[in-house]
Length: 162
Image (cartoon, rainbow, N blue to C red):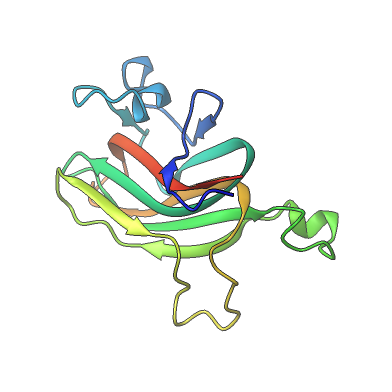
């Protein structure tokens, strides 16, 4: 495995979202690289973005660019353990989302980056980090928008492949 961090989101990454306001602000705009396009959710919380990768990855950093006023102010980052991470895990446990960390973006229009390599100090059951997974989910539990809408202009995930 290479020790060089790379962008983990590729054309083979499957992206799902909780909702989309309309076709002009769809999920494809999360990673199109254009500062003029975005994904906007419908109103109501929570909203989420799910990423499924073709093989196991080790995520180390997530970066998001929101529209001010439509920021996910509290975001829980979940992952699904890879089978190789815990061979003794039951099928049911492997299909469950596990909380990796919670991030708190500011209500601003600039790119914000958050480390995914340190466990929360309040978490009694420390995880061996960094983790390996093929699925990541960002769940926006709070929004700076009164109606709970989230607008993201850019999403990136860096880490190690394989």
